[in-house]
Image (cartoon, rainbow, N blue to C red; front, side):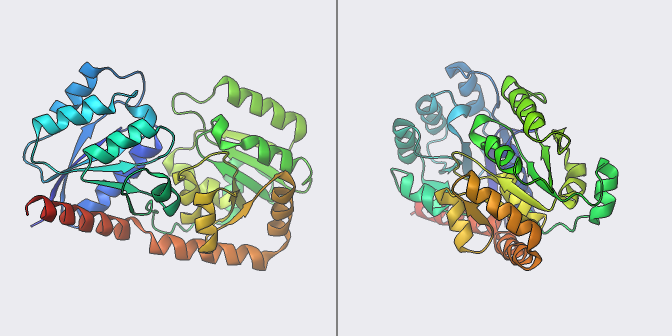
Amino acid sequence: MGLKIAYCTPWKVRCGIYKYTKNLAEAVTKLGHEVFIVRLPRFGAKSPELLSLVANHFPKDVDVFVISHEYGLYSGLEGGFYGELKHLHPDKPIITIAHAVGYNIMIDRVLAGASDKVIVHNEFCRKKFIGDATVIHHGCLDLVNCPPEEECKKVLGIPMKTPLVGYIGFITPAKGLEYVINAMAKVPDAALLIGGGYHTGQTTGYIQQLKERSVRLLSGRVQWLGYVDDNMLATVYGAIHMLVYPSIVMSESGAMLMALSHQKAVIASSLKPVKEKEKQGALTTFKNVRELRRKIRKLLSDDEYREKLVNGARDYVTENSWKNVAKQHIKLYEEVLANKNV
């Protein structure tokens, strides 16, 4: 008989943690386990009263509580939230999925002390976390076969002969889109396609500044799509030659993994979590605008190199499918339950 698992997470909002938990929960359910969702509001300041309501919504008849954590979700009130959850359900094991670590040591200590286990997405996060943590990689969607490039470009109104460099994901200052705009200014034979927006609405002052900069530097060679709905993702990826993820800081990137699932060559910032994937052959990295420009040109002209990265992306996605990741989660949950019952 399967486990009963309560996941505490943002739900049905534009949020990477929501998409992560949705994919994980669906994969866990397919393995024969029962899932309950405890909705945590994604936006706005939290209060002790609000988090108390969330804690009181956890069902009693489940085997394990799994908390999705990111610093901004709890407004610094983690101590009270975990404390009340343990008071209400003293015998229930708590597992925390820490989507980012190392940015607030006091909060990390709360997570380490209140959780029976903490899950992180990569070795970089495991080493950065102050307590014991278990690495279970962020899952990947099954490989997606995009429609033919010509068909995709026709839908988007883009000339077939124009090779596209792309970015698809949320747009905030931490994503570093200035790097790819600056690099593309000196790659005149290609165009830039940017899909994405902010978590709420399509634009912000920062996004508007980026648009103005891109139009100035890439006149006639840039298109902004806004937020891309799931039913259009395969079409947009199918039109793109390669993806660039120029983040300034990163613990993990679901958007970058989405590009790998769509079997695309990816260039990403030379950050430690990304270099782990580079060592596995999933993508390539850059350190500055000059190197990014050079790698874009190489991928535009070298089909063999681009195909090598695509093959590496396929291997990474297959190894880290949501099915495989869900199996690792269930194994850990069962280990925690066994230790709890000793």
